[in-house]
Length: 150
Image 1 (cartoon, helix red, strand yellow):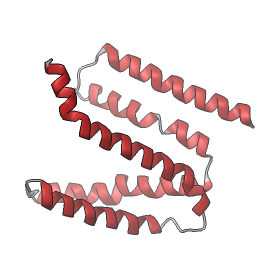
Image 2: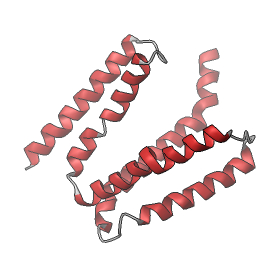
Image 3: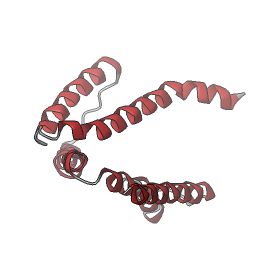
């Protein structure tokens, strides 16, 4: 019974994750229709999401102010890998090989899991091997079907 109540407790989070996945997938597929919109427009969208996120945070969460080092890390992450990822994804979905991009995106959870295990932040488990095998199989099917369609 304890497991069911835990699952019920997390249903809103699961639904939010599902909603985010559907929105991201729709954006990724439909973005090609807006290839004439410059990639720089993603900056405006990110700024809007930041403002909405801050408002929701202030309404529903307890604020813990980052120290100077944490602010610096947040700024570098936003301008660096996170910002670059949004720009590159936008550019790739508008002008690149969308099937290849989708297949390569399977590397993100694979590499993050491996980095967590290698860095000692996570213990290796059999379920991780199953998940990695499923990711690789999904990437293989995607690449294979993409080549067959050509």
